[in-house]
Amino acid sequence: MFINYSSNLLLRGLIAGNILGIGLCVIQLYTGVITLPKESYYVDRVPVLISPLHIVGLNVLTIAASFIVLWITSMIIRGISPVKAIKLT
Image (cartoon, rainbow, N blue to C red; front, side, top):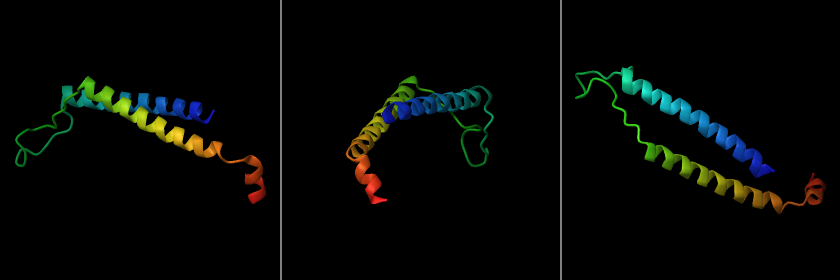
């Protein structure tokens, strides 16, 4: 149950983060809203490269790392006896 709720929250966060991040990159790519001073840089706006392979790879690594942490945490929680936890308080 702990892993189910946590993975649901993780996937919602990934979807929201991807929409926001990719959306900001697309806005920058087509409008160049974030500019740079021409005196200091060779380009006048922040360059953006949207690579689907990088996006998918980052999402997969995030999901894998999160599930490993969730699994380790659930193993620790599974070892705690409710009776012993109540007696300690």
